[in-house]
Length: 98
Image 1: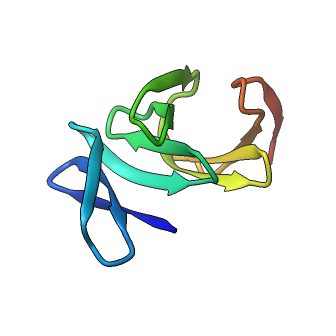
Image 2: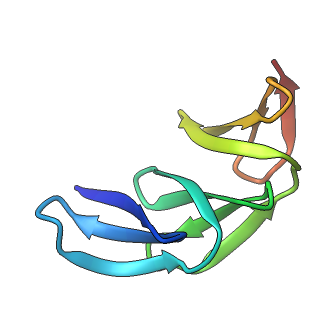
């Protein structure tokens, strides 16, 4: 199993032993969450990116003012600066706001 580490605004994918596998995103990262083979990257500009473990960008989730994003099963829960949480599909489609 792999883990994520944020260092100096970069998101790194590492083995449990701490060995660096690769750098996923290189600037402005404030949060990250790992699913089986997909990674959610929350950036300092409030956007959320969905990336593969290889680092390839799958899509940018259209949202603003995101603080963090977490996997909720196959869906994505995005916590916003206004205190609300958006539940979205992997495609980025909004399911509901909580």
